[in-house]
Length: 438
Image 1 (cartoon, one colour):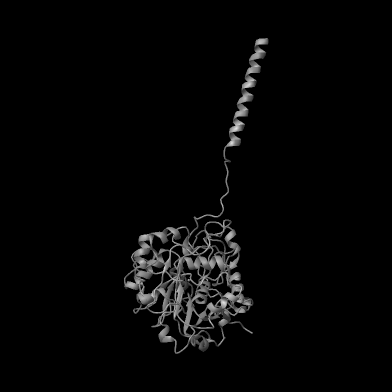
Image 2: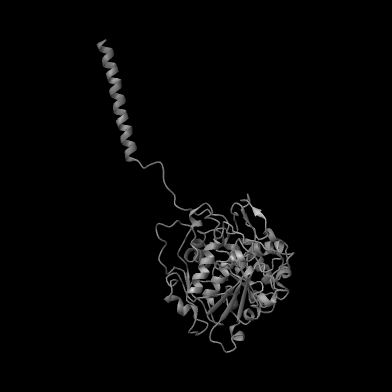
């Protein structure tokens, strides 16, 4: 019995020592769990999920779809949407600073925010003493506003270094979805001074003015019976977007279009959704410039086909003839494309929505109308905005051309109420003049 007790005691002692050893090893090693803040595997910027029970501009109620593509709603914010300058005189050059001048992103921000941008030294196009640029520093937007942010991308931008940097960001906010060779090939056609300037042709349009005056026209129902057409056409430049129907509505919205902002996806959706209302495609005129908001590669491929008068080579629009959209006189000089740094900057600095903290963070971006209006703020000396969402938006139909009342549609990939508040703030600080019913 004494021998058995010794054996049992020895076994128990060995087990106890082994347990102490295992415990010590676990305490010295790293934990088996970790937290990840944010992420970089977001999906394309043209994706969206309608909010439960919300109605789109076609009056139908939508539930969150299984597809990641968002519908075009061409809402009162000047968007279509759910999905798109720096003044520079002719012959003047731009200089990229490959190492961003700004402070690095705050350590508490998720990686997909990327609040660091490339910078370009761009001479002023005018000597306007009453410009947005000269006034912004005295407003609440002074700390947010970057005067040297590149608004447009063109042939010089797709380098290996820039591709590596911008590949951190998905969709319209970067180049993560785009092959460098494709970018070099397509953007190579944007090699003219007009491709790097939002407001090209200023010498012909200035008529002695020292300030560039821009009208930015949304598609909101507030413009119906406004009688603002002549006033809008009186500006040097007139910006429009997506389902902008002009024929029959000239008295309220004007007839000129110098800049038409769109993504290929929202353009095609507008042509499908608003055909019965009279929308057959983009405005076509000698003075019209086409400004692509590149959601994905179909925008780059469509842009190159338009510049070279060839059919789209591949992708969703393969064999499509862009001349049927932009007219037979379209040329590379009439084409522009937003820079992904600019769109990400707008999201981060002007429209930092709480959506970025939720499940739709990967698809959230400023609406196409918002990009257009803020691009004008960054390139024009003076900006007047028409047809954008105002606090009394429920009093007006979604679009000025709606034959019956349709409520504004809200989708998860934009924060239209935040955009509405931003327009009010810009108006109150005098940076823009926003049309509102009195």
